[in-house]
Length: 297
Image (cartoon, rainbow, N blue to C red):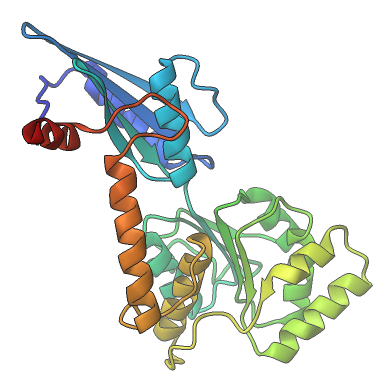
């Protein structure tokens, strides 16, 4: 293991501010750190890049590394040549939890989402419920009519929308509004199956643009079947389901035979990817593997 220790400067403080800003963006970011080392000195450069960038400010080897990191959504270190190393740090986009309905059952859901580092916004037409005192961990608390509340929120591919209004009329209005927003990762409505079916039928009957796509993704009842119907238990079940959707996973016990086999296989693949070259580029194996190979010669 090599450690790079640098004297703290204003440039490093600016880098930390940039990193905090990157964590709040709705697209993923890459922090590219390149280290050149000679027997006399070490030189370090750091470059920010984003999901939509073309990586033109870095070498072709680092470009290949950036593309591989973006595909796998995981940070990667590699040795480029005998004197140069690169670390591409993956900063995921912010996850947004958008909760409509500020009843007591929404409080543990918002608290749990905030504990995961998510940007939590809660809205309700009832100003007496949508208050900062009731939702101290939410980044945004909105007391307004539904159309105004929806307009005040940001919707992205990493957004999870949860209806907890306890009113089918409010849910229908919200579903009509959400259908016209950019696609989100998760949309769910609290309530039984027949409630979801009624909402789907009504929003399609109203002829709301893009409603069929939204209806196809609408979940209800929401949450995993954990067996706890308390407000806190429902919050855990809903957050767990959202996490599974965001990560493209099916919720299973890690101790099941199928999951144990999947973990073993994926672990070997991940290790091989971290230690091997980057497909399509000229990046060589990291130092640990290179050292091991030299030792065998």
